[in-house]
Length: 69
Image 1 (cartoon, helix red, strand yellow):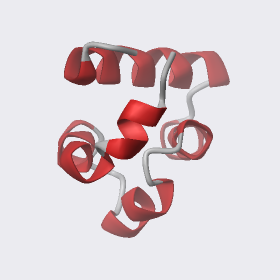
Image 2 (spheres, one colour):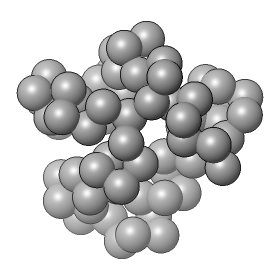
Image 3 (tube, helix red, strand yellow):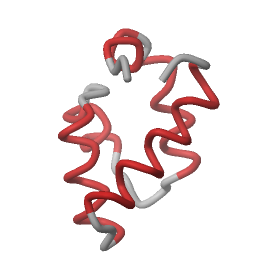
Image 4 (tube, helix red, strand yellow):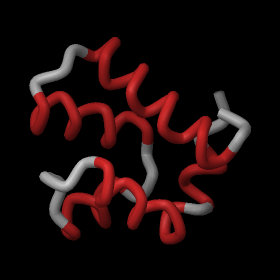
């Protein structure tokens, strides 16, 4: 997977992320910066997901929006 696309388009994508996962604060979204590891860690913390579940959720979400992951 190429997470560089997500990082490069983060400012455009974070609104969609906030809409999907509304428990995330603007500060948390800014700190994530589209970084996969930071996002997975925060999703595990906020939603109680396993690492595999966080990976699956994020991969599916960003595949739909970038068409490349």
